[in-house]
Image (cartoon, rainbow, N blue to C red; front, side):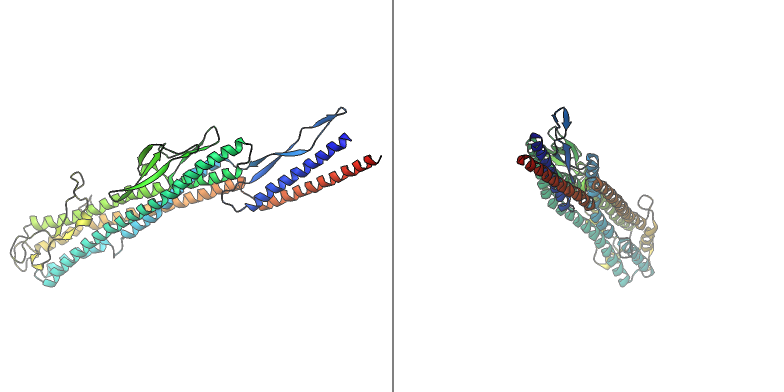
Length: 465
């Protein structure tokens, strides 16, 4: 009798084991398309064997754990690659804007530079012509306006980046807070002997999103809690405590700070990777470089023309010494480059064609100054380059930055896809495999049921004796 009762327990364990395994398989199938879900596996083990009459025989099976498939090394690689991808992705739009603004085509600044010097050549054919003089002033104004336009559009890109940063920070803070909360929940659940697999999946997905946004290094403490840090070492999440980011405007730029505990830290572009790193580097490094190049070009061209007019002894139609054609505003910062802000401040200083000097003698046929200014077109004025060549260099640099970033973005995306495929191969759900397991567990359940039916018949026979 005792042996048959034990057999009932053995059969029941088979039913419970198969039922639990079916539940785990069903959960996998239900979450086959859930982002970040890791396949779960029922760990089936034999229960402690029994000894009776000198014989040792099994007592059934049990599910001692529901394991979560995964590879921590691949997860860390995904986190790191997400940061690189976020940086290249964030930089792609503002870099494309810069390339569009600094247009190398005929409608760009290069065309206005050529038109300006063409007007001086045209004036040289008729130094006293009112229409030709008006054309010089018109082209000078167009040139100044185009410098203004480039400077304004670059500033608008900066404003756009500011807006992107301000919209990113609240979501980032929310993700950090969720990770800290999940850390606490996972620890409590597992200490109580519960299953925290779903919570771990949610946490891993959030960690990857945080890394894509700001770049983060990841480690795990003794309690199994994830710890996140910026690449400069400042803590983002420690155990169940999350730091928080804040934004403020300083001189028109959105600045980011991190508050950890009672201490706040001002952050710069090199403190980040990911989306924020790409945005801040573009705003604080790349755009200022282009603004500096355009300022230098505007300053050099205007100064060269003004210097030639005044030092050559240009005479206007009134017989007076000629004044500067262009006006520039000196930078407020005495330590700044002399050309700082030139693209924004350049303007035409005269509005009367009679004040324009064509020559140095005051005679109506004197075109010497026109020819000298027209010759500036081919002067190597900036680092061995003409004005047109210097602008072409600036435009080429913008194009090269876009091309390089696109190449890196594509490579990073491909790497991310490869890592995601590796993760899915290990932790992803294959519905075909799950269906095979489902059939196996179903067969096991049916077999255990048949086994119990047999034992019951044996007990019935025994009870009738």
